[in-house]
Amino acid sequence: MFSSGTTRRARRGMLREWRLHALSVFSLAVAFVCLGSALLVVTNLHALEERWAHAGRASIYLKDTATQDDVQMLKAALAKLPAITGVHYVSAGQARTDFGAQEIASKAELAALPVEAFPASIEIDVSAETTDAELGDMVQKLRMLSVVDDVETYQAWTERLEKLVRGGVAAAALLALVVFAAVLAVVGSTIRLALQRRKTEVEVLKLVGASDRFVKGPYIVEGGVQGALGAIGAIALLGLLFIVVRGRLDTELASLLGLEPTFLPWHVAVGMVLVGGVLGATAALTSLRKLVAV
Image 1 (spheres, rainbow, N blue to C red):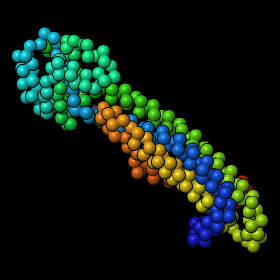
Image 2 (image 1 turned 90 degrees about the vertical axis):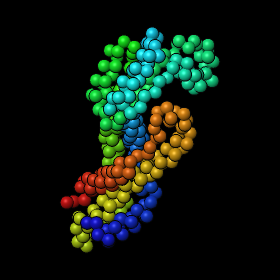
Image 3 (image 1 turned 60 degrees about the vertical axis):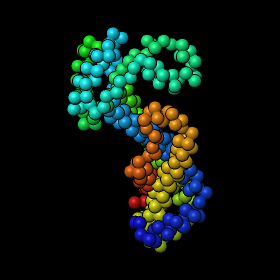
């Protein structure tokens, strides 16, 4: 069905009806842009979730009653744990200075806050081999120490992001169904209209004994090409928008999140093109079943 002759006939038909096919490809590109945007958001949210899940850091906030001896003893004990690769003490004054360097420029009233408003803490670096269960057990033990006020990790934010990612995946799946239906409708309508415009050609082919398979071949190829081109156009447009948005992204925000935005993985982009081609060919075949006798 997809011999070189079929391909040539499909190319000749698309060139002859290029306005019709161009409109179809544009409509498909708009649909795939919506799907690609959802996948792009989910991809970056998942990457952020993975980044924060393996951030490898925790903050141990100390009580106001903690003495320097308590701090030194706690630091020494933490340094001996195999799961901890680094220990750094942050005094209340240093915490105020670090926080003020980032925020006082926009909130001058923070400069009037006393040092006591900023708790002293011990920042620890956790090895990448440490599991969530091991980290959680260590946090529970640290919270029971008399000099420790609280222990903060990225786990709560990771759980929130995980829920957000699951919601994004569900939304993307629902949007994919809408896009697939749009592809089937647009390509099906385009092929039916193209077939009507070439009705005389089809009748002549049938009169000279051409099989239904021979008649259908070019239209199925045209439908597949429309779907694939629509997906390619959507990916190209998404890439351009991604470059513009990334260029305007605040570098401080990226540093805070600890992650630079990434584009769609290559296998996702290739999958969109393949799905577009298969859906386009399927829509064409479905339309032809009603118009060409099998």
